[in-house]
Image (cartoon, rainbow, N blue to C red; front, side):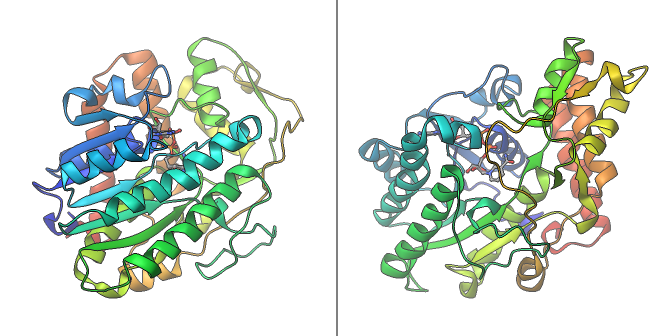
Length: 366
Ligand SMILES: NC(=O)c1ccc[n+]([C@@H]2O[C@H](COP(=O)([O-])OP(=O)(O)OC[C@H]3O[C@@H](n4cnc5c(N)ncnc54)[C@H](O)[C@@H]3O)[C@@H](O)[C@H]2O)c1
């Protein structure tokens, strides 16, 4: 997988205690990498980080990326071969209650990572993770391309667009030399689902928490359509980008969208219907009730055009909607009802996902 490029390499993952960071850490461990995590805390209880006992499997620095001096000291001391920057205030609703903190973490925190990379003397590839929400959402039906305008009507989106502008400026100002020691690329993905997420205000998380307690979940936007994708999809894109940029200078400074297949678009209601089937309810009323109420202004349909990743990296999404739902349900059901070893189960899902990608002969599986 990934040309074995991560085997024995030092890989820093910022935001390693979060949802995506925990999956990425687990996959990197499976690929033989030495993972160094940087996060300010373990953001949820339960957390995938603790449930998989990742603390024992990596080197972990608990620090706030707003603290530039500390961050730089760690990054310079660790001399990473790769950095995946995921640390962020990632919750849209929190960006309404804590706008300044969101901007400080997402925009200035990203600047601090970049400024720390400037101090490195070893070769390093950095993949900067932003979001589909960095695009100015004009609520159209077409997928957003990497060249579309950045922007954001809410603070979370704006903070991610700001991070993008900062990354671009750093790349042009300080890392422009193709033969320089630091190479950077940006990865943009949309809402992801998967086992191990316990962040607030995420619909799947709200459901499995309620269902595990035998409670009915309330749905606020049943007809909202989202391109649901499993967390492993963008992660395969991030890892493939890290591999490709290591050998292909033309990708240096480029941004890439990593989205699901078009057929994955489903309403919230459809998703919940399908997820609830795994929880053996007698009827839907036991699982959810619809409450039409949108407490804050979250953007409508936002689709990514992933032609660039297909063209330049031969990357495309692997899973269909059915297997996505099955992976998510099995993970949470195993956690709540079967009390399985979640590290083994997660590794099992990573292997199953990789086998599906192998069957499709995706380039990163070589
Ligand atoms: N989950 C999604 O659907 C989604 C969609 C698009 C983009 N993203 C982006 O992917 C990345 C990871 O998202 P996630 O869902 O895993 O988020 P998460 O909330 O589960 O995890 C966030 C991580 O960042 C860390 N963090 C937050 N503030 C920090 C600070 N000041 N200093 C150091 N660490 C800090 C947290 O401790 C945690 O490890 C984020 O950049 C997010 O914006 C996520």
